[in-house]
Length: 92
Image (cartoon, rainbow, N blue to C red; front, side, top):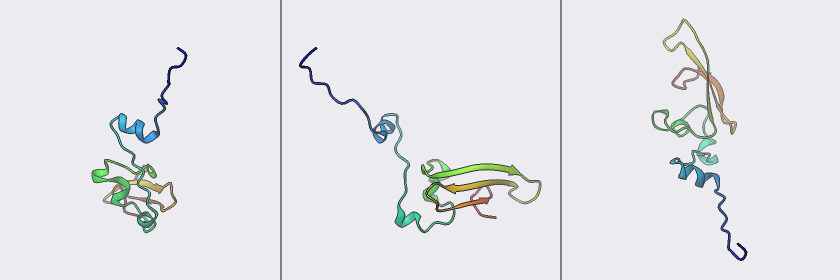
């Protein structure tokens, strides 16, 4: 059909996530995040339910010693921290 106006139907990432029922989790704020040296509430949200896009948690291994024998690697893609710790994010 000639002469028909075509609307741009391309969605931006934020719009796509909102349409899918989610919202962006990019919480990077240099003024706040610049103070962090370990995992904080802003990185993982309430009960670790809504992680920031820059947060990574990698299971490493389970030891037979200690109160929290599981070991994890915690990293921030923005370079704020990179360390090994227990399941609660406490460095060891």
